[in-house]
Length: 463
Image (cartoon, rainbow, N blue to C red; front, side, top):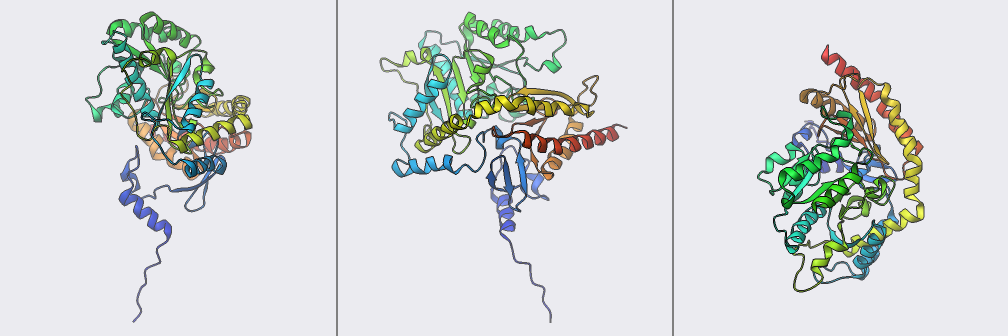
């Protein structure tokens, strides 16, 4: 009697089963993989990554705005392995080690103005959390204990820890975890494509002054802003915006925190985004590209003025993280910065920003393309129902457009980018900083037909 034998299980079968059973992916609708494969990325090289089936994808998002130097750099990873042979780990809690000391000095040298004090963290949310706590403790030591509030912008993303989430201006990310850390206040962002009725570009900075006055200047500790706002789709500042914000912060004795978790380390063609836009923050928060994501690491970079109250007596900044300043991560960061300088990465971004943007601008003839905006290798396309009126899609339409079609189709055709509706529907592109004209052509070769099909899909749905 014949028997039916089960087909032998492959490694891919096992990985898929284990992923569905045990791996809780971040910001992910787990139900989406009940009938579809989990995308399993197994290898990276340059601007490309490969899945478990060997299919190649152009990484148009630098994984998550962070693999700045590109994938597969064994020399960057080797720096961590070499460090592990000498000192795998020791804490920065009352101790120091050479990798953290040297990296802190190097960051201080690159940072603008008197930002000479580097407090390491394990990532971006921790860096923002540290900045909020430093602002509060600094003002307590300065005899202004009521200065605790934080002003951020609508739709801005500053992290997911409860303190950072109070700065985040995205309702859907805040509501599930309320009540949040108190003190988060929000003002209009710099989306000049959709200025509120009656407002001009010049009013955007003044909104911060008005909010400080409304809250009471004696209660506001800091303003936190990204040089180019990520959520909502790469909002750039209008001319003079940050110059005026700096004046406002000085007038009301409020700290200016530049959240550069994405915008630092070459993403905008400079070491720091604040350098591109010519303003001096009191604190910079950073992570991601510091190590090009070859190891987890972030940092809060503070001015000498903010460190002053902690330099005498028994005071200390009562805050820290076990793995912050990890020697292997610090060694990797140093190797990453060495590669930046040796290979002219900042110069490469500045030289190729124009062609990258021109490619995206060329897509404006597609009816669904409303706005193209951004800076450096950090660009976005806003998708609209009608170019002339700038009418946006409803929530249901955005769901159909982004998750029902674009996300899957772009990935199927070999392009990784972000289709997002935190705000109006956008596609974000943020390739590794080593990308050039060849990759821009590949991006266009996928975007143009997919966006054209998306425009037709949405047109038919409205008929």
